[in-house]
Image 1 (tube, helix red, strand yellow):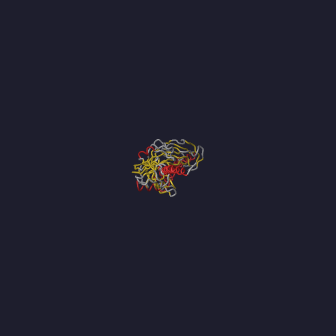
Image 2 (cartoon, one colour; image 1 turned 45 degrees about the vertical axis):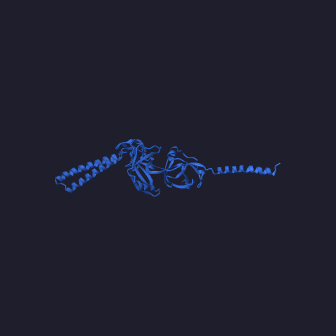
Image 3 (tube, one colour; image 1 turned 90 degrees about the horizontal axis):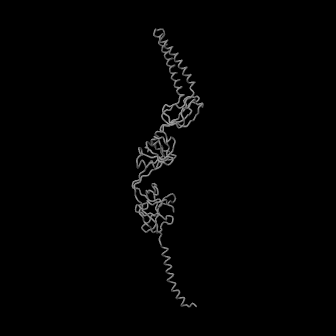
Length: 363
């Protein structure tokens, strides 16, 4: 039977026990989460900026028929390397050969007439005007011969310079009109590589680094490999393209092995130098509404959400142009588990320990 004295005794025993439990719960409730943190660091960095490019042969021309007629002969093949003066095509020459023969016959007749008239003029039988008229007829006949020879020469189409043959646009037996496209010829021993630079980059170049003329660049080919030879920026072409807000730069590349061809695409790598750049790990950064932030631990060991501006990107690292000081302590982990104002405990590690072991961050 429980008496009042027993109830009092049990109450006295339970109070310390409950107080102990409350104390334990309070300690657990106030235990701070512990996360890794580090500080920004400075380093001289050189990074390649990438620009999509178009590769063009310095000498690239269309080969067209200069006269109308049937295509009688093709002496080359698509993709073949040609030497200057090498025969390429022949347009049926019979009509032009006949015209040349007629012109030569007329020239011979005019010559005979001139010589007869000259003999008579020397004996004062005909007037000097008649001799001048005969001479004019001879000159005209000789001009017709040269014109016919030129037209006949147009039926033999030869390479204008050393280069690689393009695609056939006509076959043997085709009836060609004057000016009809036959193929293209490209000298690819040297190439112009055009790349579009945004207006902001162009202004930065001019204001901070110069116009870039004479600077060396690299070319990343379509297969992702870097081309063996470097190029040199030769000129800035024309005006800005208002549609895209870009301006064209042109670089000259040697192509001794003829790996590159006219019309290919690639990516120009133009190095930009960042002296004494401020660097932080990428995994410390989070994005809100297209803006980049980090958590900074203040003097009260509380988290502050800090807006930063990213200048450039490296593997696992960001170059920061604004928003941080080198003494700031930046949270590296638990970013999605905390909120601004939270108090945290940190394991502050120097950057030289953090950077070598950085891996792709997934939380």
